[in-house]
Amino acid sequence: MNPHRARPAGGRRSGLATTLLTVAIAAAGLFAVWTFISLVVLDPSKRFLLPPPWEVLATLGDATIMTPMLQALWRTATVALAGLALAFVIGTAWAVVMAQSRWAERILYPYAVILQTVPILALTPLIGIWFGYGIPARIVVAVIIAVFPVISTTFFGLTSGPTRAAHDLFTLARATRWQRLSRLEVPAAVPSVFTGLRSAAGLSVIGAIVGDFFFQQGAAGIGGLLRIYTLRLNMDALLTAVGLTALFGVVVFSVFAALEGWVVGRWYGRGRP
Amino acid sequence: MTPPALVLDGVTKVFDDGTRALDGVSLTVGRGELVTLVGPSGCGKTTALRVAAGLEPPTSGSVHLDADPAAVSFVFQDPTLLEWRTATANVALVPELRGVTRAERTERAHRALEDVGLGDALDKRPRQLSGGMRMRVSIARALVADPELALFDEPFGALDEITRLSLQTLLQGIFARRRFAGLFITHSVSEAVYLSDRVLVMGPGRVEAEVAVPFAHPRPPELRFTPEFAALAGDVSRLLERAGGEPTTASESSPSGVTTARGEPATASEGSPSGVTDARGDS
Image 1 (spheres, each protein chain N blue to C red):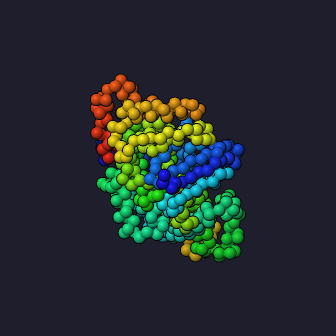
Image 2 (image 1 turned 60 degrees about the vertical axis):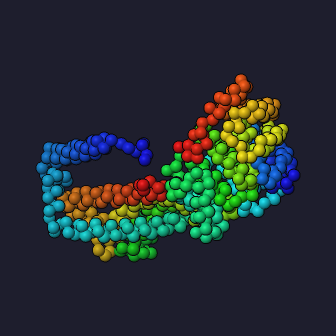
Image 3 (image 1 turned 135 degrees about the vertical axis):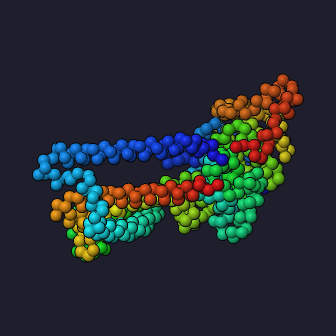
């Protein structure tokens, strides 16, 4: 139907092959540099600072290390998800209120900016006193870090999504404020909301790990384990945990990017014959 | 004379930045009468229409609307469709906002879309439609509420010439059947003469001249290639020039003037391809 999207299948496959090749070359390069530093640059007495790749990879087969690590990662994922859900609810509500009037915007926007700019380190003592030093405090950190993109992109979508003519159309039809919000501003903001959600998802993972790091009461999250491995100078486990965490962040980001593409596509009637 | 549906009486509009967009504009639109407003860009046509619609308050002067405000519709320069809604849901929007039941508004939207030749695109989203088709949806949305007064803000200005001609023919056919009161803004002289009963020529901020168009409705597309049409279009173009604007698309959209001036009406019918009138000719 759409000739612009018809692309030769071969081109696409070779695109994928190129991507895989690039990834393989990058990985091989990383391993080469890593091995070189570990075995050649570092003095054997300091080799524990960066063990060679195969020693680190060996921990993947060690259940005594991997079981607690995966459990901790799962806990962190739960905290991140809870933080993201709360950030989404709070952020969209915040943006909807701000979009109602210039006054609301002037009053509320500075607080959103402050939340974004205050270093989380400065807030941790307060969070600890108010929310305790366990899971709830970790969720609060995830919310604080993740909420700003939700507020800013939703607000942007609500105010810049609908054109002036679309507003005129609603004015001429004597639409109520609720009708304008529910049938024009919110639907027009949907693509922006999902862009914000994608950024917020990545940030909520970071927030949950930072939360783990500071609030260690209760079962440890992956951030807590990172701290423990660091204190014990358990470099194999530390490097594995860092790698796993990075991989987890990539997965979360990709899942939400795919979700965004799918939702926005359906929204505009693509992806449906 | 029928009682007017719309009267602008000495309307002046000065914007906050001091721009004097309208300077004592008076005009009337009778019931069942289509009036066009032609003028160069920036002469205040759109402002006049926005004041008439109640979207801008006049600085001085008055606007009398003898129509149910619910029966006034507006066609924008851009189709202004909601991208996430199907064609049907876009057309059904205004009845929906007024609380018409889903079954009834859907049925009315389907009928309006069939009227504009989009009977097989009911469930398409705007991005799946061509520019001309989107404008048809926009026209269907304006007509779904059975307007007493319809206001058109240069709706065909951004379309290519072939699509533009086919939409003019479509709108003329609908007008001939339904006879709403209409105020239509354009900068194309031939569009103005083809569609309207009266052409008002605007100079900067004011109505400078008026030309009555005597052709009966419905008007066949071939009307554009007759000497009478060309003569009238020539009159309007001259008035437009005198009013202080250059006729921007007059020469480009009335090549028939050349043909008929040579006295060859035979070539005129050749020059009006049936594809232009085909409802789905634009894509």
